[in-house]
Length: 460
Image 1 (cartoon, rainbow, N blue to C red):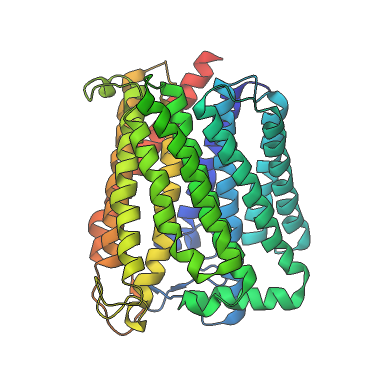
Image 2: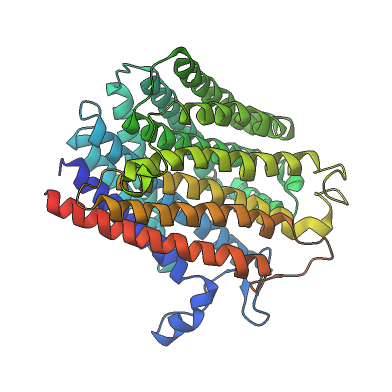
C-alpha cells in the first residue's frame, strides 16, 4: 500500500479500536464485561470493587508490577499509533520524504507493537508477545531513521520537524536503554521498586538511575511528538510571510532543543534537571503560541463550514490551553512542592499524596489528548465529501477536549487536603464536568471517524 490516505484510515481505525478497548476495560463497564463472559476485574488493577474506589497502587507487589507493566505496554501502543498517524499525514503532504516503503514499514512496526502490547497485557504474558512488542518498536525506530536520512528541509518548519525527529530518535535510544534494564534481574527489581514507590513520593525514586532515565524519556517524547503534530497542522494551513513568522519558527527550534536537553538531563542530574523542565518548556510553548497566530487565517464563522478553520482555531486554542491548564498549574505545583505557597501544607506532604499522583497522571493525559485531537483535526481538515459535517464533528471534538482538560485540573488540584483515602469515582469534578466533556468529545471523535472514512472511500 502506498496511498497516504489509506494509511491515515488505518491509523485512525487502530486508534479508535485501542482507545475504545481501553475505555471498555475501565471500571464503569465491569458489569457489561461480566455479562458477556469477560473478566470483571483486571490483574493488578488499582480499582477496589468492594469500596468502589481507585487505590494509589495495588497493595500486592506482584499485582502492582503487573499493573505498571500493562500501563507501559498500552501507552507505548497508543504512542506508536499516533506516530504512525503523523507519518501518514506527513506522507500526504510530502511524498518526496515519506514514500510507500516508509509507510508500510511503519504500519508493520505499529501492528507488531499494538498486537504484542495488547496480548501481553491482557491475555498471555509470555516472552513471544513481549518480543513482538520490542521488535515492533525497533521497526518504528528504523522507519524514523530512514525518514531522517531522506529529509531535505526547504524552509524553517521543515527544520523544526527535522530537529524534533532527531531528538525523538535520541529519546528512542534512551527508551531502549530503559527497556534493556530488564535483562538484568537485579536492575529490573530495583527499577520496579522505584516505579512503585514513586507513586507515593517521587523523591524516593530519584536514587534509581533507570527511573530517572524513564522520566526524562517520557517528558521529552510526549512534548516533542505533540509539537510535531502542531507543526504538521501549521504546514498544512500555511504561514503568512514576514520576519515575525521566521522568528517564531526559529524560537520553536530553540525551544525544542532546550526542552529536550532539560528532559534528558534528568537521567544524569535528577532533581536539579527536573526543576528546569517546566521553565525550559515555556520557551517552546511560547514559540508555538506565536506561530499559531502567524498561520493563514479563517474567521470563526468560516470554521463552521470549512474544517480547515476548526484546525486553525484548534491550534490556537490548544496552545492557549497548554499555557492555562498545563504550564500554569505545573508552575504552581512546582513552586509549592516544598514550600506552602499555593498549597498548605506543601504539595509534597503526605496529605496531598492522591492529588500529586492524580496530577502526575492527568498532566500526561492532557498532553496526549492535545496530541491526538490535533492530529484528528488535521485529518478532518482534509475531508471534501461533506465539509460542514466535518466542521461540526471537529468542533464537537475540540470543545469536548477543551472542557475536559480544563476541568481535569479541578479534579486533580481542587480537592481539600486530608488523610489519604482511596479516591471515589463519584468525585463531583469527574461526574459533573470531566465525564460529560469526554462524552461530548467521544461523540465528536466517532462522527469525525465516520466522516473521514466515507470521504476516504468516496475518494478512492
